[in-house]
Length: 103
Image (cartoon, rainbow, N blue to C red; front, side):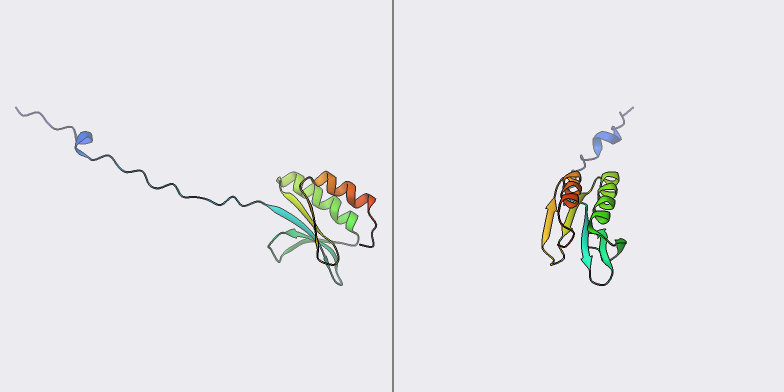
């Protein structure tokens, strides 16, 4: 009686698919001035505003809380549109409390 061939051995080894390179997307929350509405907290790159605030300090306190919960970075813009970038949200809050509100 003829020996049956092992079906596993008969199949050629499957080639591994090339690894897809995924870009690391860094999540960033942004605090920016919106004329006529106040300080807006939103995700950077998004048009949707999460919440508006009358003062920069209130907005910074909120953005620190949100970024802490979601593990995101904080980016703060001045009223003139220039970036004030902080990797550490607590540092941003401390700076906002000590800086002048008129920026």
